[in-house]
Length: 231
Image (cartoon, rainbow, N blue to C red; front, side):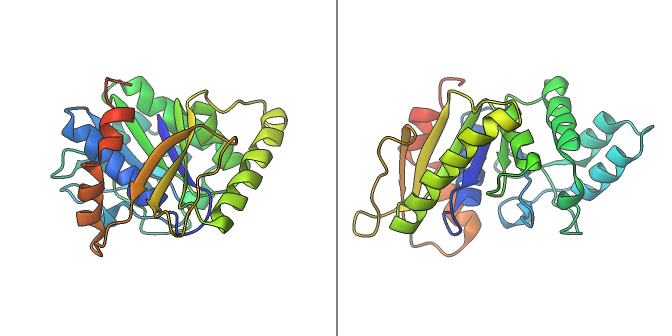
């Protein structure tokens, strides 16, 4: 489970998460992309034939007698890039209705299916119990920043907050927790040293179409260096 979280607005964590999924699929990996942002949508990056989506999956989770694993399998679609994904809910408030227990159950179920080598999860920046549920089960976490002064300051405060929350919620960020710079430019950004290991940086591309941008990012050497080798 690879979790991407922005440290500030406009960092492009969703784009990087989608590009990660595309890069992994391009390496021949079976990868499931889950957009679990509060108001996010997977349709900006992926499309595929199928019925139902996250809304029908959430409904099944509320019904105690429902076969959630079967419902998940029926809602998963496949993009032309090879990425498997679940269509976002039509109701943007559905994600907010999920409890921390719901989130843990969903991620554990995906892992137990053993159908995907990687699960890429895109989450909103927050320090609530629901967000912690994603981090608890993550094998790798990327905090995404654009390197501006504001973003760096927010990153420091976010990491400090996470350290305090580890005791409250009895969890630990995985050892593989990194700071990743996206849309980074030396004239406007600066790397933040001594807070988290820096995974690397992705440049700014002058591409306005999100899907085209995702595929361009997916070809960057970052993905070969840090996400290759079956890690």
